[in-house]
Length: 111
Image 1 (cartoon, one colour):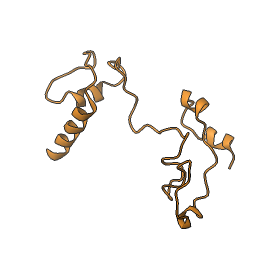
Image 2: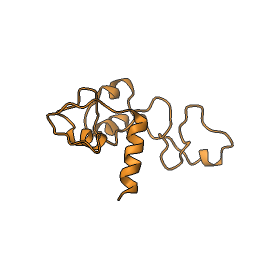
Image 3: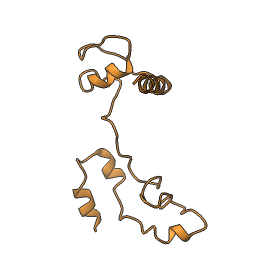
Image 4: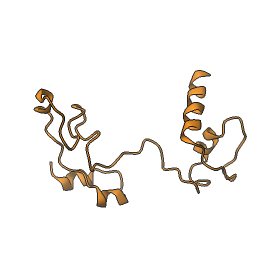
């Protein structure tokens, strides 16, 4: 498998791809028997050799949410402002990471 074929399988071009392109997947079979970790972080997770490796792009689990995110992600804004009615046209500033974590944990606890 070549680098070009990996790049073609990406969902869409991103600015990160130019700065941090995918490399050929590491062979982690020997890493399982190694006493020490690899210096670049590859094969720290034997099932997913790139997880935690240096110079590899992150994959988003949710759509990007920036401070100007009022028309692109109204659902997430509603989740972050639990207990307050919001609409997609209402602007809400982003909450802190700890408040988001607590809100999600409270939502899970109340299910």
